[in-house]
Amino acid sequence: MAKRQQLSPEFKDINPLGKVPAIVDGRLKLFESHAILIYLSSAFPSVADHWYPNDLSKRAKIHSVLDWHHTNLRRGAAGYVLNSVLGPALGLPLNPKAAAEAEQLLTKSLSTLETFWLKGNAKFLLGSNQPSIADLSLVCELMQLQVLDDKDRLRLLSTHKKVEQWIENTKKATMPHFDETHEILFKVKEGFQKRREMGTLSKPGLQSKI
Image (tube, rainbow, N blue to C red; front, side, top):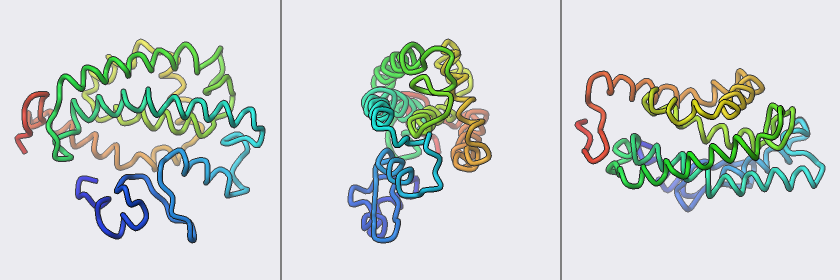
């Protein structure tokens, strides 16, 4: 994305909107992360049923989480990361006002996760003891907080103990693939940390020195 490859003609042949993620499976060209997760879970018989159950009532509940995610957790997490840290890497200025508004939504969304979607003592969303594509989508959304300063990330997450445990449960349930999938994210995190130590990372209201 830093090289704007998603805007190339080759990529736009897959997704004309120039956004990631996108996949090609035979003649099918598909974009939007939730659509991709649903397709992959349905198209391959080897995928365990708990990821996207055949039971329609369970599927409907998974869809309710995914729909909530789009306008709550995603907007909060992505908006905060973009406007407080990531913007300059994508050619955008940091925006303290937008970051503050996104943080409010993120905090509210984390509280909703803690008190509503993570029911009882269940390990995963919707009171389940096995993960679904909803767990994958929402945990991966929160993983972008890794690029924040450690103190800032802990400030946001540490008061939500059930959320922190759920993230760990999802990681363990998907190892070693979880770390493999987030390998680039971890490298980006290292890069931002080095720039913080060197004092060359942009702060809200300032343009990048690099």
